[in-house]
Each structure stands twice: as structure tokens, then as C-alpha cells.
Amino acid sequence: MAQRILFTGGSGKAGRHVLPWLASRGYQILNFDLKPSEHAHIPTLLGDITDGSQVFNAMTSHFGYGGYALGRPPGPVDAVVHFAAVPRILLMTDDETYRVNVMGTYHVIEAAMKLGIRKVIIASSETTYGVCFAEGDRDYHAFPLEEDYDTDPMDSYGLSKVVNEKTARSFAERFTADIYALRIGNVIEPHEYHRFPGFLANPMSRKRNAWSYIDARDLGQIVHLCLQKSGLGFQVFNAVNNSITANEPTAEFLKKWCPQTPHRRPLVGQEAPLSNRKIHEQLGFVEAHDWRNEVKPAGG
Image (tube, rainbow, N blue to C red; front, side, top):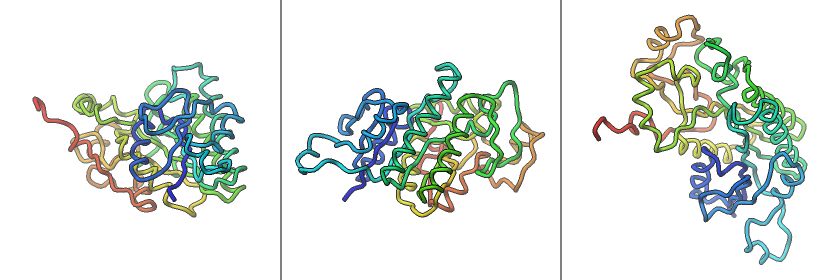
């Protein structure tokens, strides 16, 4: 029987690509969001993650009218993928961004654990590395950025994601559950690759993203791999593609554009400064959308 998944925030920028990717792999998905998904074949239950009772109900809901034919109330879903959030700073006030993201994540994880759901994947962020929304120009502590980095954001959004990782760790240890936090890089949708020539022409515009990105479709693969991998307890994974958004080798590029930042290990070829080595080694991630293959030639 296909896994039943509650996916929060499936109507957002990343979720709108991850939803159909997972559906194509046979998952039964219920999208839980403030607005419907654009994918008519994937049901949406409208609701608010900051309301704990709504979250609890969503995890124990029929996915459609067909569920009533079974003659019994639905049990909890098999897993939860939690992407719903205020997606960045300057959309709401700082305190509201923090409240929604922190309390929403708390409600999602708490409901899942107390319902006996032992697999939860949450969306963390590259902003936890402290440069993306910093006040002024700030250097990273060291390259590459790996999951053991001392996260130290200044902003309400990045701070909310650090707190959410701590919440996930706490519940994973208390309930002996698998809760994986994805530090998602700059999400690039298929129609956005036209922006890459501009990235190359203005390298410092990409510093806040550590010259890294994640294709929205490859993010779908990463979520799938997380759903299939059990027994890891609490984990943080950088969710990014393989390559730096630059033409030069990474070590040479960073020596020029970020010369004060030390390197903790040799940077090989054009590997992304925000390292995805862990998802390669522990999850078996193999990217399908290298930006060099996605960017159309000038005039093409």
C-alpha cells in the first residue's frame, strides 16, 4: 500500500514542484495549506499550522470522498513533510514571522509524535548559516558549509529555522523518531534558469546563497529519499545541487571573492560551497538538474 503523506505548504514555491514529484512515485498525498494547490489531482485541506487542533485533524483526515467507502475513520498518516512557513523576511513583521514558523513547526512535530507518526521531514534553510539576511556584508566562518557549522543568523527567519531544528532534535530523542531537517538552498524553478547569466556576471549577488542552489525537482528527489530512509533519528541535511554558480573552480573562485574565509578541507572541482556531501553519502542523492545543462545558450 502506498504511503499516506501529509504535506504542509504544498502550494508554495518549492512545494508546488515537490508535490507532483512525490505523487509520480506513488505516494498518496494530502496538501495542507492556506490556499489550494495548482495540482487538481492532489487534494488540499485548507488550514493553518499555527492552530494545533487543525494540524492534529489534518493528520487524521480522509484524503477525499473515497476514504468513506472503507467504512472506518482514518488513522494517522504514515509520514509528514512540513514545508509551510512564512518563506522569508519582510513579508510579515519579524515577530510574526518567528511566531508562525516556530509555533507552526512545534504543532506539526508534536501532533505527529503524539499520534505515533515516526517520520517527519521539515524544511530548514540556508539562512541558518548567518549570511543570507545579515546586516551588512558578513563572511562565512569557513568553507565548505557543512551540517556541523555553528549556525548564527541575525534575522527572525533564520533564527526561526535554527529553533525548529532544536525542536526537531528534542522530539526525535524523546519519541525515538526519525525527524530530518533539510537546509534548503536557494530554490530554482525550471523557468528561472534564465537568471543564471546574471548570477555569473555579478558574483557577489550570490554570496548570500553561498553561490549554491537547489533545483525544485531535485528537491523532490531529496524528500523522497528521506521518506525511504529510516533509522537515522534526528538529522540535518543540506539540500542543494552539486555545483557552484560560477564558471571557475570553487577554490579559485572563493580565493578571489571571499579571500578572508578559511577552508576546512580542499574544495574539489566546482563543488558547491554549501556542501551536499552528506545527502550523497547517507541518502544516495544523484542530481538530475545541473544548471549548466539547464541554461539555454544566448539566442537559443
